[in-house]
Every structure is written in C-alpha cells, then in structure tokens.
Length: 142
Image (cartoon, rainbow, N blue to C red; front, side):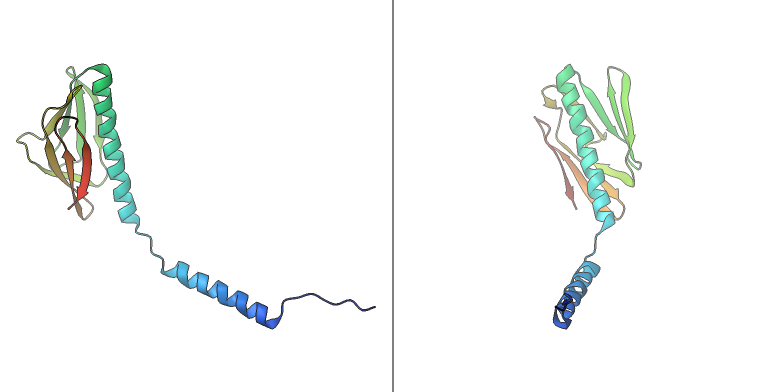
C-alpha cells in the first residue's frame, strides 16, 4: 500500500497568492489621516472638559467662570475667587469671540449668555458654540 502525499495543487496556490496580493493592495491604499484624528480627539476632550465644569456648577450650585485667552491656548476655570483649573489645549490658538470679553459663566440654571469662540488647530478653524439657557455645547469645523 502506497501513501499519498496531501498538498496544495498549483491552482489552489495561485488562488491563495491572488487573495494575498489583493489584500496587500487594498491595505496599501487605505490612508489614515492622523492629523484629523488628533484634532477630533482634542475637540472631544475640550467638550468633555466644558461639560465636566458645567455639571460641577449644577452639582455644587456655584457660578463658574470660563475664560479663554485670545491669541493663546489657555482655558481657565474660576469660582468663588480662586482658580479651579487651567488647561493648555495642544496646537490650539483662540482667535475671536462674539463677546467683548471672551468668557462665559456656567450657572446651575445654565449659562449667562450664548456665545461662539473661533479657534485654530493646526491648519483648521473651528467654532465653539455655547447655546443659551441649558448651555448645550458643540464644535463646528469652519
């Protein structure tokens, strides 16, 4: 009795190579934009930070002042005469606000006024929009 060897046929090997070549070509042309992902991450962190202090104002029944440094990257949170936190946002420069003073007041009942603040991150411009009353916050790319 003779033993038969089991192996791939020539056709099976060619089909396997064809599938591998197609997968390599598809993966090679898929481009991931790291700058865009980084900007999205920073914007998400920024909104999370603002939502945290807004929730803190409601929970502790305080008025929290949020100040933006025009021409810089600093966001400052103050309450009861002391600084609660200072944050430097990476690659961000605040340009302009629709208010004379680039600040908002987070109150237990909402915000004192609606505002929008324009800032630049890398080569993109964004608008932070804080709506009146409940203080809903969103960021739009310009």
